[in-house]
Image (tube, rainbow, N blue to C red; front, side):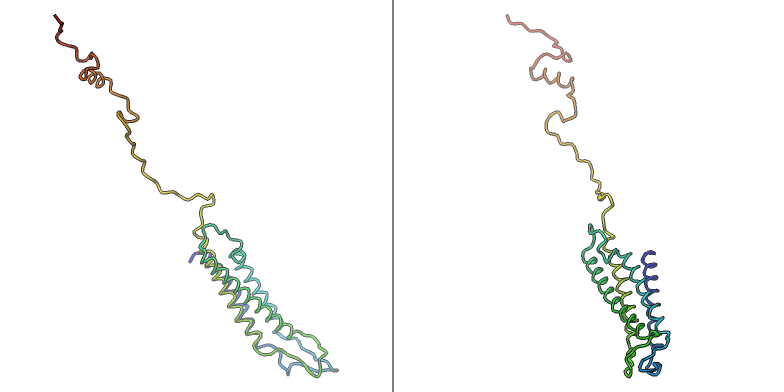
Length: 222
């Protein structure tokens, strides 16, 4: 695994785990019916640690999602398509969508849990509503799922663009051996005729006297 991928995965995972841990703790610290007081026809909810834990958990979750979405290129929409592996790109986008769905549901659950553990007074007596079990726990599990999908999306989108062409759009071309010259006639192209050979050939075939081979005898008609 590359150093950059490892660092991003570790940071996102750390924020997600911290958010999940706070969620599990808030589940144990949330208000129970015995903690709620009824006074003058109003339900008084005391200060509770689950309120602060829920707020901190949703903030950590938001930071994790922002980081992984930024490095992944806005769910893959901001990354170039040229040269990218389409199957990996689609898988990365799908994982990113699942990550955001899980993060949104987790965030809503965290906010809901924090709201019902806030130190307020509600005019609902004699019915004093309280948070049911499992809300913070569900949010904690979804936080981890969102981080897993987000990291998976980042890795797939990064792998999809690893085969992209160079910035100038030029790919290295394989070197080819130079083609051999084609001979189309005599003499070959690019060569000058040999003057001595031409003169000798002219004498042999009767095309004229040659200075290289002068006649040794003369003949006359009687």
